[in-house]
Length: 244
Image: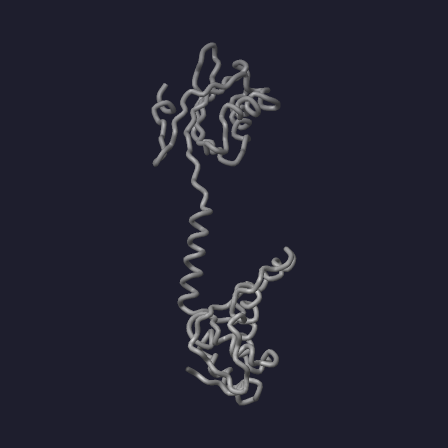
């Protein structure tokens, strides 16, 4: 059982400050009734002259208002002070209003300025748990080969391809392309793209972007030639692009 001189005296406050130089709490690794005993004995908060005691006082004051303090302790005695009633360490009643609760939330910080190894480990575990629970599952992807046909043999195919590639959206990535003869001097554009399934609908893209103004100035129609799901690796459709 430890004993402290009256912390309202200069000598007592100095001893308290020295005691808290290497500690977060009066005893143990969490706030307990020993902290309440010393806290209650103080007539007023320690001045900034006593850095360690001042930080500890602010921390205990915040804990009392938001989460209570453990009833455990080693039985610290402060000379010249009355014993602390057990109810003083019980969890305080909930705030009377939402505004009061919000105000208390602002105090839920480590005002003491020091953390024990146990507190650091607990904080790291909480952060890892939150990160794991909020991590968004990666969407599946698909590779798509599209045939894009012009109106006639006079259509500028270079401008047609530029117009197609000008379509940009999240989850759409244009790839290789080639011109394929279809007869009577007309060639079609065959182009590959990769899409994120949850973000891009190829059918919607064709209906709402590839076959409407201003791109329909060059494009007569579009057809999906191949649609391959990409699972654990990219599926590269090489033969379709390099063979006639």
